[in-house]
View 1 (tube, rainbow, N blue to C red):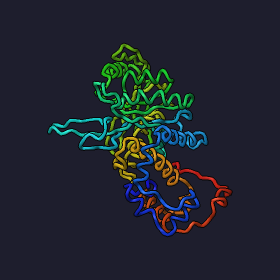
View 2 (cartoon, rainbow, N blue to C red):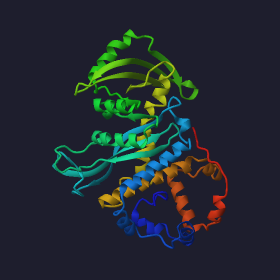
View 3 (spheres, rainbow, N blue to C red):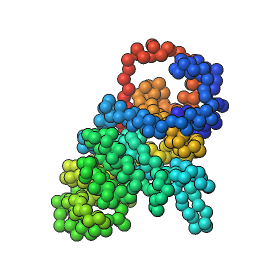
View 4 (cartoon, rainbow, N blue to C red):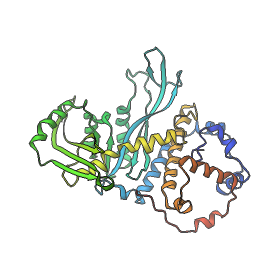
Length: 390
């Protein structure tokens, strides 16, 4: 359903059945028919979401172990894990006790279900779900609603327990520029690169403004982009002491980049615990901090507008909703591997005209094209897949 971009559960019975689909079902799965969408909904309501989470995480782990992610490590060491939350489902009336609520100025209330994602992101556009934390009101006695930060405080120990020695670097937006986040990263020895907005951490901004003029050696002009037409002016200050609201002290570094492209200048600024040197700064900024957008563009935007319909209610059962969400993450990972893989490019040198067309072509192959080879013959065939690194 997701790989073929059917966009709704009810389309399974209309658009995945055909003259050749039954033969493939029997050859691949030993069954003669596709289950009805309602059957899936009922079955998924009985499954354990933690088991599906392990499949998603295991898929990413398999790619790490097979060194698929090695060419994209920051500073030849750290895998980039972007953190961000997004809305998934919205209802006009209370859907379940776990719904979050938002009251609007006109008095209406929106009931919604967001998630916090930790995704592996790369410079060539990969965005693989590594771990998910659902943002939901679990404790009926809690006076404040669940939120992204609370979800991160739950996700972090899970991530550390599952990957105790994996060298990761966390990427986050300004929401994560907070003392408790710094404390968790220090505890787990995780590097981080977090967007530093002008309105956040006023004392850090003051220290940066006061110390930067006194450290002229911490400046660098760097040119990048086609024909080196993009000019980047870097300035940084190391070892700024920040004391959070509970009096915990943190040593942080601030990196500022003013980028000029076609006479337009933009400022980017990050707070990090990575050591900053002239040889490392361009990589930390361009192959680190700037890649946080991958979770929004190649991640959430693709899943919402690329045919997966992340915001569509594939189920209203609270448990089945999570199962469908994890299946979408699996399908998105498989589609990325297929679309960036050398086998598809060899078969279709001119491409297929976009991701939705790839899904439609896959559906047509499933429904109309006879199966040409046996699974045993395919399993014995050796081949290698390489990925687009552009």
